[in-house]
Length: 278
Image 1: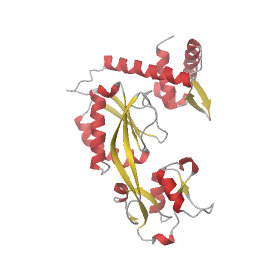
Image 2: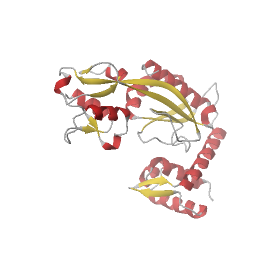
Image 3: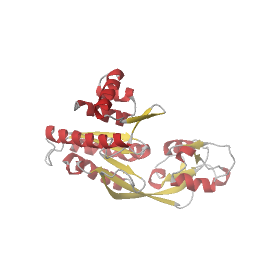
Image 4: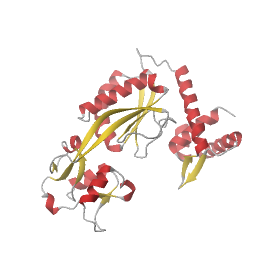
């Protein structure tokens, strides 16, 4: 087994497509496909299933990828002088898009100045990238994790959700902006469904940023995180908070001791506190 095959497997797991892995690695799709075929032939089993154009790890493939992520981390530790005095290296953080856009990005400036050696990637994703496979080094989640057995978890904050409406419109005259079935499991979606008109028509959204845009456009009311709602022009809270969600941090078990990862984890907690999410 060529060790370099593992690099291709990890890139494919993270990108979930041949084209995405090819862009990440700076090669063409044919090369990625050829390396995948060679790796699966050497292993004697499939690493990925193909579903709707995406490459999804099989059960056995997931174990291979977890071990490959450990190998990748060991190589990085050997190659990069990541020390407490001078943290450096690449750190990948994943969270839901609105948390990255409205909390993390506005707080990045001071961190980037303090830690110029850390290459920080912020990955907006609502599908829970795997920390165990190092699709991300750190993840922020809005529910207590029940997977990613190779990750350490801790509760790092909380957020209230408050009913919101366009500032110039009375709530009684507006419909609830419900969530599409793909996001119907979210606690805020469940709460809205209990209030909303059961009629089949009306606008449905799949993420918080679209819900915000809909309220600002005067299309209806929805639940928004209290700290976010407080800073939105044209949006007014309509009563007290009605829902609370916890914020959990997951960190790869082996990378938690890396100074660069520790520095990013501390910064994330600080950013949440400054944003009133602690």
